[in-house]
Structure formats: structure tokens, C-alpha cells
Image (cartoon, rainbow, N blue to C red):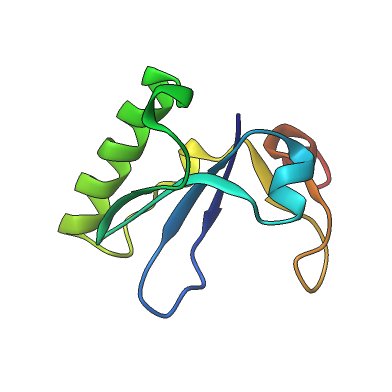
Length: 96
């Protein structure tokens, strides 16, 4: 799964899970986690247990602190201005 973390939401951080890079680029999420809870957009059995546990953990963390740093969950980040293309976290870090 592709995981992104958006910290620029006025209401606090949001973590989103996507099935594929294409789905992430077109904002078709499987689920998201914020301080408000975990929102699921597909049948529950379609979500890997590990991803669901991570979402619940992110929710609990963000519930306690809406600006908590949960960027460690991200597999991809936007590169460039205006939410440029999604790239793997390791690739983005090596760009320096």
C-alpha cells in the first residue's frame, strides 16, 4: 500500500492509505486516519490487518496531539511545488 501524511490540513495531520501509486495520485484512498478517527472507504476485509492497526495507532496518537509527528508511516511524499509527483520516501530523502 501507498501511505501519505499531510501535515498542512488546518484541522491537523491526516494519514491516507491507497492501493496503488495511481490511486494515490488521483486521491482514491482506501482509508484515512486523523484525530477524529479512522475512515474506511472500502470493504473492511480488503484492508490488510497491518494497515488497519497502523491507522488505529495513528488515530490514537493524533487524538492525543493533532500535530503529532506520524511521518514515519509515510511510504511516499510529494516532490516539488503544488503537491508535485509522489515519490518513495527514501528517494525524496536522497534528493537532499
